[in-house]
Image (tube, rainbow, N blue to C red; front, top):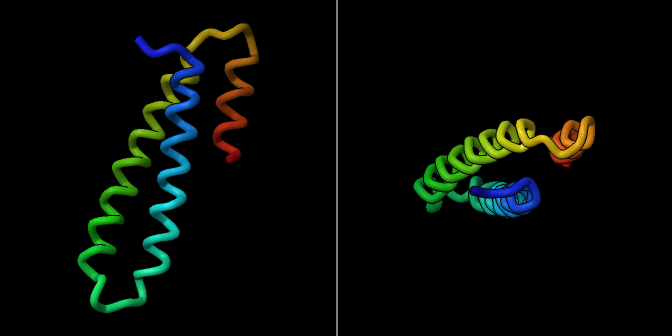
Length: 79
């Protein structure tokens, strides 16, 4: 079972990977030779987004101490 801090670390790691993927997509999207690569990267980004959404939901359900868990979930959405 994953605790709240581990889940938060996974969430941040996944968001960081998505940022890199978005940069890669932006860089190669104007190149006709990379059309297939852009399609594959777009699918990967969608998969990561689904994982992020699941992690945010799970993090929101963890009882940390009143509003603290709500504040952490809110802060994560802002980044």
